[in-house]
Length: 123
Image (cartoon, rainbow, N blue to C red; front, side):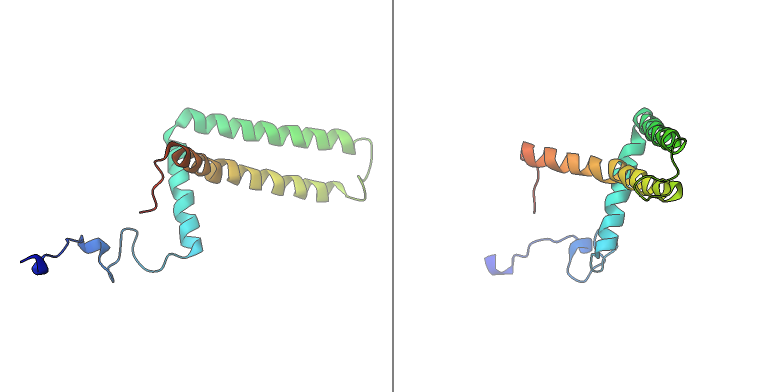
C-alpha cells in the first residue's frame, strides 16, 4: 500500500502545465514586468502616498529647472555643456530616479524587511 501513495500536486503546478503566471520560461523582461506591476499596484493602493510622491517629484523637477534657469541667465554654457544638453541630462536623471523610487524601491524595501524578519522563503 505504501508504494502506491502519490503526493497530490495541483494541476496548475504540474510539470508541463501553464503554471501560476501563464507558464513558459520566465524571461527577464517578464520578471521585470511582473515586478513593476506588483510594485505599482502596491503604490496605488495608498492614494495619499501616491499623490505625495507625485508632488515631491514635481517639486524636485521644478527646483532643478529653476536652478538651471538661474545658472544660464548668467552664462551661455556650463563646462562646455549647452542648456539643452543639461536639460536632457536632468530629464533623464529625474526619469530614472522616479522609476527607481516608484517601482523598484518599495519592492526592495519589502525584500530587505522579509529577509530581516526571517519570512523570506525560497521554497
